[in-house]
Length: 312
Ligand SMILES: Nc1nc2c(ncn2[C@@H]2O[C@H](COP(=O)(O)OP(=O)(O)OP(=O)(O)O)[C@@H](O)[C@H]2O)c(=O)[nH]1
Ligand SMILES: [Mg+2]
Ligand SMILES: [Zn+2]
Image (cartoon, rainbow, N blue to C red; front, top):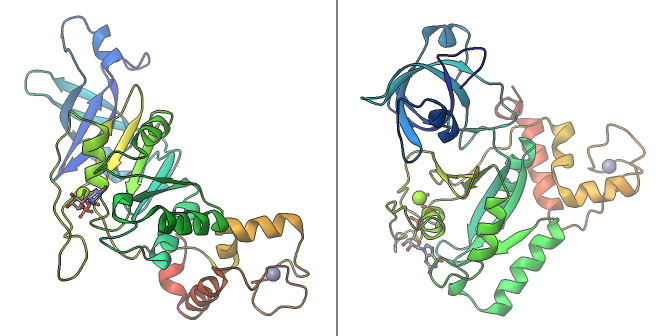
């Protein structure tokens, strides 16, 4: 219950359905209201006050909201206010994200290192901590897995290898997610995001489907973002897979998104403050770093085609 607004309750948007928003109300808040007995969290189908539209306030999954006009019988309410966000991930669109778990399968579909990079850099760009979840590790040998893990380490990232088939790594993943307020599972279609959620939260049984044999890609089974509770106070978002995240940033800030470049820049500085780490004299970035060619190519794209990359 909001003390300044006795008739409103605080909740979190857990899904968007057509023109409605599904808001999950804090169990604690409901318990204070003794006239309504709910044994578990309650989800309400909500519309939003027109004033929010006039104010240009968009509401996405993950937004913390105040609701009024609560109809307990029909489980409906109206959103009257949205709290300021602590973070926002544009694609998949989720507010108040504290961890982006980038799911990348080692096979079926085959691991694409440039694609993995793009997912990682968009998380860095939104200032949200990324964690790599290497999925389907039952499909490759331990030696091959080690090659991938070491490569990602060289890039400066943490990684948890898992299999939803034989439960390897699952305990570690649950522990990590339970320590995190809102984790988003993001990644290409077919890598096993939904399968992981089904495995991690046994009360849930979301639809999954096999990877296309012909195209060796996922078939876009999950169509909407949805939040699920994983432990007390922690949420996990399932999201639709997509293949090519756009990195939306200015060329001058692009290098700072790469942890391995950052490591070099904290040790020593380039001669010129506005160095783009191309062929400038006195540049300290090692041009032999594995992702340097990707940096260079993407930087040229940003410079030559600035519009899609301009931050807004
Ligand atoms: N071998 C193996 N297959 C897996 C594993 N996890 C998931 N799969 C299979 O991969 C296929 C795709 O899984 P989904 O969970 O639907 O993938 P998704 O990432 O949610 O895909 P979208 O919803 O399209 O984004 C299914 O056939 C799963 O059974 C795993 O750990 N090992
Ligand atoms: Mg899915
Ligand atoms: Zn430089």
